[in-house]
Length: 254
Image 1: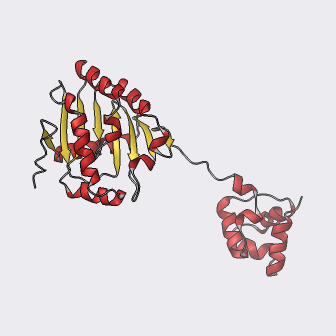
Image 2: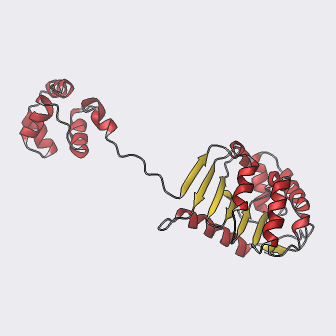
Image 3: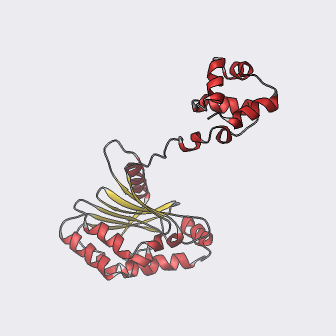
């Protein structure tokens, strides 16, 4: 069956097969096969030809719409969630339950997690089992927390949430292997890591983190995405100030 769309486009321009072939840089017989045998050209040649004729490449060759390469999804991406609220707290707890080597929690407040009894139980069990656990909380007195509070539309309430979260975490202070630090960095994600898996909750301007997407990532050989997030935790940790109690809120050193 001939390609009547291409034939009409050539006729509208008053072009011959040879004229289009010269523009594309191919043999005129190839253009003839495109028209009379409805052959589909390579995408590069088709794009040049369509542009020259002032047509859409997908109108002239609909098959190319299906021939686009499929999107490549990194094997490091286990799952994607549109909102954190789509995930039950148990998903975070279950992740921590698997940890044998380390647990990291990088947040501003993460207040919602501090009220979960199962999470408290996991922290105590993992601490007793020798798993190091690091909590990185926002410094309530920092500019970063003030800006994030304003961005979310809750103002100084964010600083209050951090203080309340630390009070809820009071039973963890002094547990073996459990450390707390306050940071004043700008966070683009809250990160919850257990060994070689993590949940990265993005931050969006104008909405709380519970309304932002979550990536479930895993470390795989040759991958780099997981390590990029993990390295960001280390950078924040190095710049943060250790605290020894929920009321040790003297502020970060300049």
